[in-house]
Amino acid sequence: MVHIVGAGPGAVDLITVRGYSLLQKADVIIYAGSLVNKELLEIAGEGAQLYDSAQMTLEEVMETVERAEKGGLVTVRLHTGDPCLYGAVREQMDWMDSKGIRYDICPGVSSFCGAASALEMEYTLPGITQSVIITRMAGRTPVPERESIRSMAAHRSTMVVFLSAGMLGELSEELKAGGCSPQTPAAIVYKATWPDEKVVRCTVGTLAQAADQEQIRKTALIVVGESVGRRDTSAPSCTILNSPRNSGGKNQFGSRRHVCGGYGTRKQGADDGPGPGCAGTVPGDCRVYGVCGSGPGVFS
Ligand code: SAH
Image (cartoon, rainbow, N blue to C red; front, top):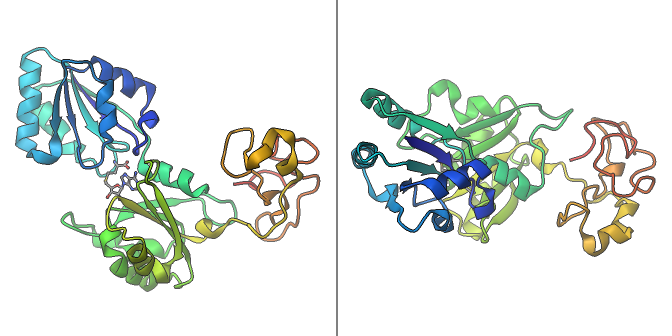
């Protein structure tokens, strides 16, 4: 039996419980060495055979799977993030189908979710956009013309661009050609959830320069759209910031920044104005819609 497992975006404790236990049971683990956190391999039992697929051709990966199957072994094919995005799993599943090899898929936390957490943002902000476009610049893998960055940019949805950190000048031009102003908020998230994660906030016009300054060329996601800029840091913070439960700037969820962070007074949608009774009325419940008085969709 083969389990295709999503390893999560990087942090070892972001693999799923199911993925963890499959790793414990595995006799053979074939992992995508370029992006999978190698500490995950420590979950495996002593005798597990480990193969880094970055050093292998597809044929070699498949031969390894077939050998393991013949020996009645359990194989984990460990992919970064969630296997369904840019995971090249289709060809592996087709091959296993052709050989009659049984497999299943265990989802993982994709890096685009890791990037949102690093940015402390919501991709789908009411009044701004309700869609997220996950895409990439064409590279060795072509992208259909109808899905070019410029045509996707025309939607003004939040965009999360994979596999393109080395092409930010071109990405910027494409976004502008699609009608994004150079001032459109953007962010580069390098190695989301890893210990050396970096978050760089910039604009569509300064993407390449910002990446150069931080020397980011790979393992990054580019997030673009008005939702990236929706963080009202100028608004006064909720009184909950001073609550004993939140001393040290940490909220009850242990977040680095207070969840209300001024959002209690943020304008809802276009201009509903400040929400009355923000946080101070119900300390600790700032995140519950309505508590800050402005109704659903107000908080990040
Ligand atoms: N299946 C993976 C994506 C694999 S494609 C997923 O769901 O995340 C590899 C690309 O994903 C990288 O080039 C980079 O653009 C992005 N990526 C993967 N892990 C990342 C991370 N921790 N931080 C930022 N980008 C990451």
